[in-house]
Image (cartoon, rainbow, N blue to C red):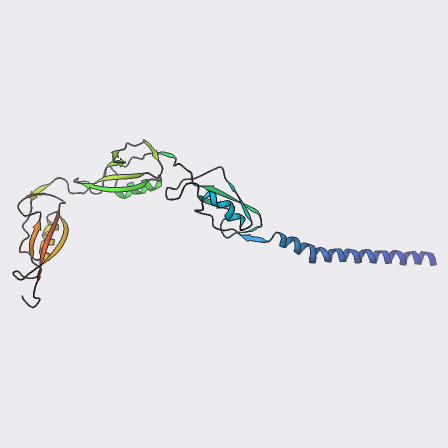
Length: 257
């Protein structure tokens, strides 16, 4: 019996020693090894790569303990340099482990070809929205006499008419010929000489003409604010929407009149 008790005590001692060793190992793991392992993979904030050229990516990310991989897909933005970063994953500001790979999408070297949309007989505002949706750039707006105000009459690419469906590079500039809403009506240019500048502007706009430059000349022979010259001159045949410049008097001596 006494031998049995001694055996139990010895077994208990061994168990206590094993439990102690186990606790010691857990202590070392959680307080020494695990923190060291975690710090070894310390987190890094992902930088914003948008606009950075492909040739600069490797060094830029290496300095931040990161790597990159170019995705097989690509996009095209006319305002961005070819082979510059358009998109990235993870996004800027994300926290990742050191040496994490950042996936980037590059801007294509050459713009893809797209089919020209049909803009003729559409309102200018709508035409501009269509161009933007197709990735095209609105170029010059050329107004011509036509009763359709702000209606697209022609669409041009590099100075030539371009038909709907013709393939052009994405990002191309498209010029639009647009109606001014007046048409080709002709009438005699009114006489503005002797009117004050307010009356003259009212008559110009009321006649369907456009107000041009207002120039000032010093004189002591007519009251201040009087129209002394106009271009085009009165009496000639003018078209609706034509521009009219006027010259208005300023007094040499402000105390007169």
